[in-house]
Amino acid sequence: MVDNRYTRTRLLGSGGMSDVYLAHDEVLDRDVALKVLKDKYAENEEFVELFKREARSAAALSHPNIVSVYDWGYSEDEMYYIAMEYVSGGTLKDRVLGEGALNPDAATKFASQVARALGHAHQHGVIHRDI
Image 1 (cartoon, one colour):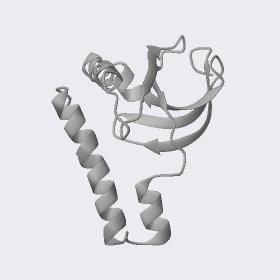
Image 2 (cartoon, one colour):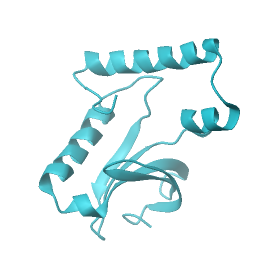
Image 3 (tube, helix red, strand yellow):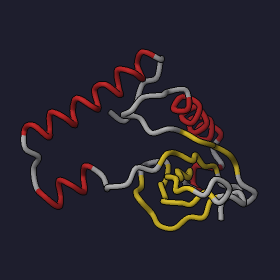
Image 4 (cartoon, helix red, strand yellow):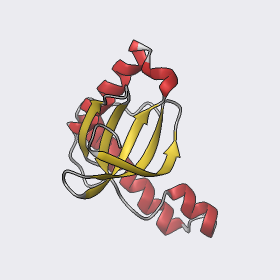
């Protein structure tokens, strides 16, 4: 249980700074993607500030190709987290590994969605540093 609200069920993925879990929001009775800052960065104020800035920047965006941010916080057990919209169906990486290369139409569709999301973010002064 994170912050007496989110019950983590399974790891969805990991990145350089954080892990993302499927979790259940017990207050609103819905599944969320819970991004948790890795312990080794939680003591570093620069990483904590980057994490907070990510939450604020993403929460300011509203676009069909960008997941919504619902909440962020620091739990009693010293864990920084961001609660986000959970979109089921797996990742693009999972799809490619399971089915092989995308056909050109599907690749174009995904690339267009990513470009629209990035364009929206850029219009609002948000730069995605991993892309």
